[in-house]
Amino acid sequence: MIRRRLIILVNAVLLAACASGSDNTGLPGSSPAAETASSPLVSDLVPVMFDLGLPDWMPPPLEPASNRLNAAKAELGRRLFYDVRLSADQTKSCASCHRQQLAFTDGLPLSPGVTGQLTPRNSMSLANVAYVPVLTWANPLLHTLEQQALVPLLGQEPVELGMANLDAELIARLKAEPIYRELFPKAFPEKQGEIGLATVVRALSAFQRTIISANSPYDQYRYEGKIDAMPDAAIRGEALFFSEKFECHHCHNNINMSDNILHARAPHPEIAFNNTGLYNIDGKGAYPPGNTGIAELTGRAEDMGRFKAPSLRNVAVTAPYMHDGSIATLDAVLDHYAAGGRTIKDGPHAGVGRDNPLKSSFVPGFEMTPDERADLIAFLKSLTDETFLTNPKLSDPWKKEP
Ligand code: HEC
Ligand code: HEC
Image 1: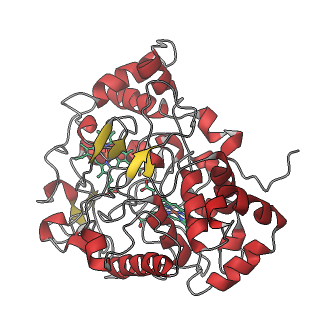
Image 2 (image 1 turned 30 degrees about the vertical axis):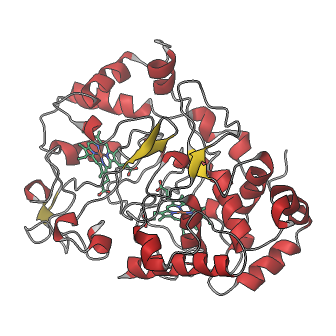
């Protein structure tokens, strides 16, 4: 229910933005909300032409034709991403829950918004988010960054930045900042530098498409042939990860180690949601109320517990894990998969995940020696891209250089 309300809210805002003369933010402007929600994956996507500094092996991502990326937009978006003026009480920005040094996650199981209310789910990494065809943990309808940005900005259940009904205030705050009076006209000359929700959302999305991670030891080893880039343990761990015994690769594959991917060389999106047996509260596969996966939106009983496999890029720095941050360490994630689904002994969520009837057949459980465990962990650690975590182009532009 909560999610459904959000979708309606998002569509209403986009339609209102269209009606008020701005063109669409990634969705067909004239379609009614219901049609928009079910329309085929955004049809107006085109390859990003802007130089993202991608290595040769990395295909360009796609972007809406109505919001082409350029340097001015990305620069403006970066300012906005780190600006607390985007929150009701000017205490939080997107970066409060998406911190660069944690691969744009926040290290918390669940995150407080401006009222202190916690998000129901764990903050997600934004590394290579330009390649993600369905955004957030369990929303098959959320396809573009332009749509998604409205959720933390305006969402009321939960309140994140809390800007619902504060449009005029937001615009006044942004207009009062000299840097924005310079940057908006550069980024949106075709709109005479209009400062408004639609341009804010577009610039935020443009910046997020520049959040590229492609230089982990594993990238260097696997795609650039640098055989010394990874320790031997990680090389052995890679073989285990991609083996039919451990099965990880069925759901964690491609350049983002996720089975949700879209780019210029694979223009048909790959989209999947899976139940890994994290819960089994009633013996029939139930997940905790409020976090039932895509079942919440599809209404189908068999979709209970089905979530998106997140990217495993930089996974060593994105703890805690899973959609609700309920697993603290990578070791404990391996325990969950080794058991073929987690067992919770007592409390309201008690149940044997291994027996979850809705669980994917690729999570059967396995025996793992201590050496195999160490190798798998070494492999997961080789996905950490230090140059990305410290890339000055993605850092807070409001901080004065030392
Ligand atoms: C209060 C914390 C918080 C704030 C503030 C916040 N986010 Fe998030 N973000 C989250 C959480 C939690 C999720 C997962 C949401 C879910 O699945 O329900 C998320 C998910 C996302 C995703 C989806 C990533 C993916 O791989 O699917 C994007 C994109 C995103 N946020 C961008 C933003 C932007 C842009 C802003 C600022 C306008 C922002 N966030 C502000 C907590 C936050
Ligand atoms: C059937 C598909 C599937 C298989 C097989 C699979 N995963 Fe996952 N993985 C997922 C999904 C879906 C999630 C999110 C589940 C949730 O939050 O409820 C996930 C989450 C994770 C996370 C947490 C990431 C984060 O940022 O929270 C890690 C780490 C992980 N998997 C590693 C592995 C490893 C290692 C293996 C092999 C032993 C594996 N996975 C096998 C689908 C799969």
